Image (tube, rainbow, N blue to C red):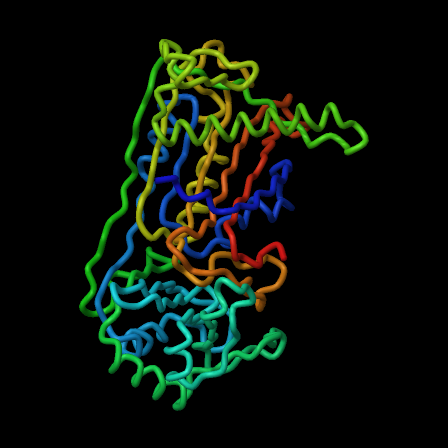
Length: 390
């Protein structure tokens, strides 16, 4: 039997230099409210390993009706500002594709089948794609009122008596939800909602020696009037992100001693690679955006990755790669920085994708203030039936 064709994907690359005005990197994690896995790869550095091993998180799981959960969750949602300390996901059940999310804006988003939509009696919008036109999106704000300066462009419900009655009736028909949730400000939250089980998230660490390690040199993409330079840049970037993905998978092809049959497997490491040692760290669980951003910030602010254990400590050896994997079944995967009211629609399916991969390096000479410039390249990948980029 032939394997099904791969799901169409869209990928965008952007580059920049980290600094006080670099909002793209400083708020990268906040644009992805639901992350289920974070990978960090770098040339081995005992200092950076020690720093990242101290990065731990926590989330909670419970079984509850949606109505009862929202009554408890409202205490963590700002009354008048578009802000929420708590984020949560209602996972699909064995007999239902309905899902929901409560994001960092305090907005509840339901993605439901046509049958559920008609029985709920709450106005929403149909998915715009023919393959998903039997799925409907409904937005419900948990705030006392929507701030006057942030009126939504599409209809949002406020969690009033009508909405509460509709959700209670839905709970009665459906039964309890399997819910996962976390808090943005974990230092001030001692326990979860009653009946919840806490799940700690600690990093796993894998070290490998004798690996082809790229000599990362990041530069802005050449202008389109230089087609040969553009092709070379695209090919180099593709090889870097391929290498990062292979490290995360533990691919044997990266080993300098690998002698695979070229008829079965052929791999060429990125140009300028050398043989060295790498460290791969991973966090798995429902990770708060604040935690993901703290891992990125801790790396930028630490000297460990500026002084890797690579031979000679060459600037090309000093890089770190981060990869974040979103939850495929959440109806809200991305929140634009410049428009807090905008919610790009996407189909919440097991094969959906929301992945970003960031490579940072300090491969330039020290700046005028004595600090080394941090260059970065970011690849963002989304799957089919996602309106983020139109």
